[in-house]
Amino acid sequence: MSRYMFIARYDSAGVKGVVSKGGSARAAVIEKLAADLGGRMESFDFAFGEDDVYTLVELPDNKAAAAVALAVNSTGLAHVRTVVLMSPEEVDAATRQDVSYTPPGQ
Image (cartoon, one colour):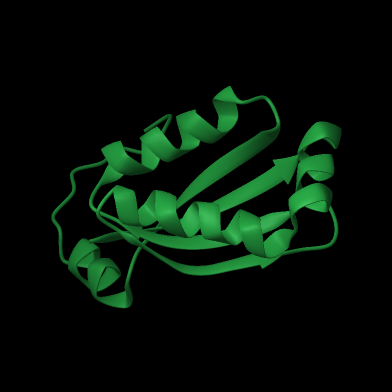
């Protein structure tokens, strides 16, 4: 199972929705969404500043993660950025991968 961080920013109508139904209701929606896709929500945190929500989710694959991002962004009430997360072991495996690369200008 792959892990993803979804970083969301609400527009004013999205904020009004959170105010009317509460933060716990929003987290429950995302928890169900992840489960319906065969995954699970690890965490859901509201934040101050430029971003409103940080959510860590395990999902079966990139297709499921893209479906989440498309569904959220298509509402127009929130904008979500998706970050694919990698374990230290996955990075270890990547460092052992042979890659033939030529830097620009060489």
